[in-house]
Amino acid sequence: MSLPDPWTHLAALTPARIALGRAGPALPTREVLALSLAHAQARDAVHAPFDVDAMAASLEALGQPTLQVTSAAPDRATYLRRPDLGRRLSAESREALEAWPSRGADLVIVVADGLSSAAVHAHAAPLVAALAPYVARAGWRLGPVVVASQGRVALGDEIGQVLEAAMVAVLVGERPGLSSPDSLGAYLTHGPRVGRTDAERNCISNIRPAGLSYEEAAFKLAWHVAEARRLGLTGVGLKDESDLIALIEEPLGRLPPA
Image (tube, rainbow, N blue to C red):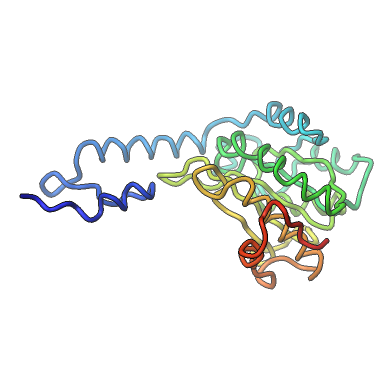
């Protein structure tokens, strides 16, 4: 009589690769094939083209004005080889931003393809929709939603600087994992300007239905914006204590102080 494998019920609770079994000294064929499929999906996520027009249309359907820009990386291959170019605007895009008629928004949202356009296509618009009630209730003034192709997180620094925004939130496709090719990240920076470091940002990661829900992510992002306004900073000086608030009040029923 064989004993039940104590790992079996744990494997049902996580996409992590545990309790895979074995065939002699190796993995079972089904697990080798599953790993190969996951690896292919991760590679596809990195190289899949970003449909900028469709992304802008989905955001405009939410009532958000959009502006399309590109980074200094002229194509995907260059973007992957030269991360520095993905952090700066192309000359044409900078000119377009400089011509935008309004300045000084409380928050500018940037939607960038990053390393997974699939994540952005699937999750960026629902997250913006979930964030909208918080923005409206706090009275924060939004700039245009900037849709950026071949963009990395730091591209938001130059965008925010040109638009003279108090803060910038970059919604970007994260590096695909073998169980999460469609993970979206949100990076918030107070006082954006070229030269900011990652230590001066706050990140909300793994935004997707199988990770952090849109509602939870929107609550956390709104909480961070409110605290950044209060403290005048983001990054290592701003600790995420939003979960403490969530233990006391319903996330969708509480707006952090503006």
